[in-house]
Image (cartoon, rainbow, N blue to C red; front, side, top):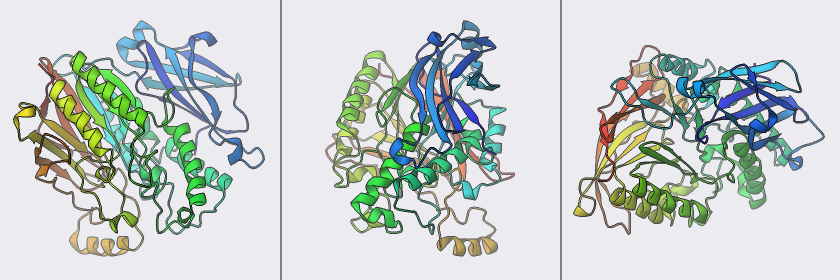
Length: 487
């Protein structure tokens, strides 16, 4: 059953604050809120409203006044004891009623010292609820938490599949679409048998990708009649973007703006390269995002931070052919501003230190290292970690034949594509540096990845662990690698 209300810890709160996303469901108006922290009521002026509690559906998306979802984001003040324990019990009363409570995790400000201490990031993407109605991924993450408590949950795209089921007739009507999309989010965000246990495993950060809109957004999709016209694409995009804003955006900045935060000596830059893509393939990021990227690189260089860049798609992908763009998703190198992005990441390696890329999307996992081939970045390295999917999407037609193969092969992951080796040379146009690419690990099947960051002097060691979402399958620990800041 879906909950009446949900509290969730969010990443990137200011120092001394706990950032909380609140979702309230089945209401026709926003209730009044009364907050308590660790059993102590909070005065209204002690709670900072990052985003007010508002209807996920705007007036244009409503017919009459139905019960619906409301969401908002709030910063609560932390007592010193909560900072020390990195947990806090949060309660909220809706219109003075019974409290709704949750024990929420607090983001650390730095990677901890000590041989047994680590900063843990749970990397996940691509969840199709119809393929995991039993809640396998949620139970697996509960088991992970018993040993490796995530300090950050990074959901790197396709948190919902708004364009499914494939054979469903989607009405070309804004209120109908908004209602359908809200139901998709409510299920994944609140039902324990869906994605809710994963999203609540630690402070949450989301990056939207194409299925948070539709396959290969913003280009037309052959199987979605709604996307065949400009008006149809506009209505769908409007409803999908509003749901992204209500459920996946946890900051006061405009939706789609990048999120930046430090966990010393790490610095994260979370880029939405999907929402504002242009159909002419000129831009995948806004000018404001590119300016923020330039400022972030300078910040890393000035303060000796190790850069972690995350987006919904891998940077190490070949762009589809012109024909492929009608049936496959476009990749980051398809866009003209890809070169601008790569030049800034190259500058980060030159001026600040090593680089880590975190992403999802491709329905397999991989750990890759990149070593410069010239002296410009001598001594530097970059790494990429991909985790995808947590629940493979249904594919009409090909799934039937895959299941037949599975009966004979005994391979539980017959429907999943083989993980792809990275190209041996990464040479984006316009860059001064070229990179030799080494595939360190390939992972097939449903999965999540837990990355543990540990200090090693002034540097940070990273250990990726893949958890196959298959009963009885053992986790796979990948050889650790070292991230070094500039000297």
